[in-house]
Length: 601
Image (cartoon, rainbow, N blue to C red; front, side, top):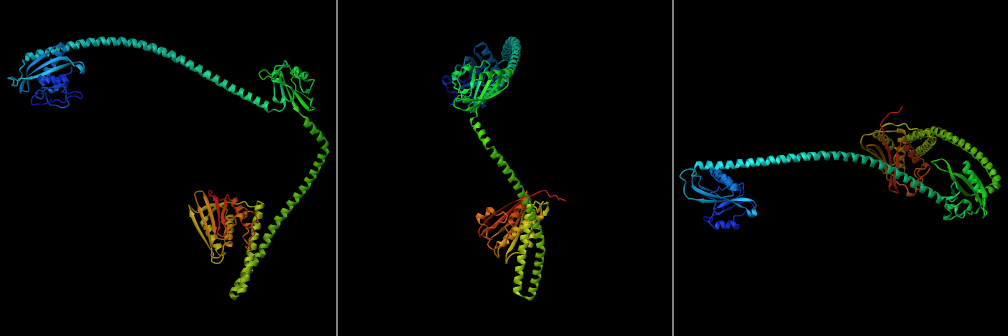
């Protein structure tokens, strides 16, 4: 090192200029670099700033040297690596500043691995006389040797490449042959796999069918076992050799059976039933296939019906034994005997019933006739009473006007009494007539388009003339549009009835609220008052005919109004509900579905 300067080259990561070897070289006063076979600097020692360009992140020695020198160093490095001997370049011109000698020695890189080059720089500290101190012949010879060496290496590489190509070619042929064999084996395996798959599908189908068969057999066996357990009657199954195959639990109480009796001849089994022809009946049934039914008695005095029928195999249709069933008919026999005794009483009862039926039929005819007369009377009374009532109302109106002109308060008072009484009687007659029409089914409402707002405003104006002193009816409409499809007559009667009730059952100076709302698919009508309200116990009966709440007192009414309103609402596919508290008022809400507006003729 000179003047304590460090190397001018930034070393690669992991390399250092101060390891043990570098320290020895620097202590010996040497300056140079270590490179790999491609002349990439891996170490630097001494002051290399006088010989190498200061280019950060560049470790190619050929780019750190002057161009002419770099060419010579490449040729010399190749010769040193080829011959494994030291090559010396003397008096090299470094940009005309001074001449430099370089010694290039090959060596093993130790921990860095592979063959490397040690390049030492020596400066003569004098300027060369010519631009190049090396004769052109020497340079040409050195380059020629470099070219010859490269050509030789190229030939060797080509030969190695040809051998490798032939080897690869032979390997390709082997691979191709192996590929063909593998493809053939793969095709065979694919074919075998398809066959296996087909066999597997068949096995799956068979397995599925077997599972279904097993499931059906299990279900049938369960059904049979459950039938045996639930059957309280006794049943025996014998084969064509008259050997006992199976018996139901109910047979144990009729016949002395044990589990060990299965497989024994039926003739060897002792029974509680006196039935000497049992074996003969079984043989006859197996012979002709016809069922035999007989009665037999047990040793305890019970009567049994014994039914012997053939046991038929479904797969062959042949008889393979018999089924013997025992039915206890002791109580049935007793009942039949009792029925025989009471048969006369039963006949007498039927005669009495027929007579009563005739009487009832005549009573029904009378009731129908009375209902018809009632209908005619209500219709006649309603129409006949309306004429004198109209005359009474008109006369009271005229007398009231005269009393007003005469300014006679007593006449005016009695006139108002007559008018109110005739109006109440008219309302009663209208209610009776409406009820009769509803009962006889003569009301068939025709729906038509209706302007809800105008319709409600007209009713409000008419009803305002009937309110008590300082009572007010307030109407308000909200929602989308104002049209609905309903029966105007039924709707008007319903609203007038509800507003009339609000007027009757609310005190003077009270407010009666009347609302209509049209939503997307509904018309909602609300009538609210702050009158006497409806007691909770009476609310469940409110829509019943002739029912009046217990707090109505002397307020006139028939108890038919709300019944009629409810039935009118139902005829127009609507619903009605209410909320009420005593002395706080009542709210009635009627809801109708909106329908497409279509005029019915």
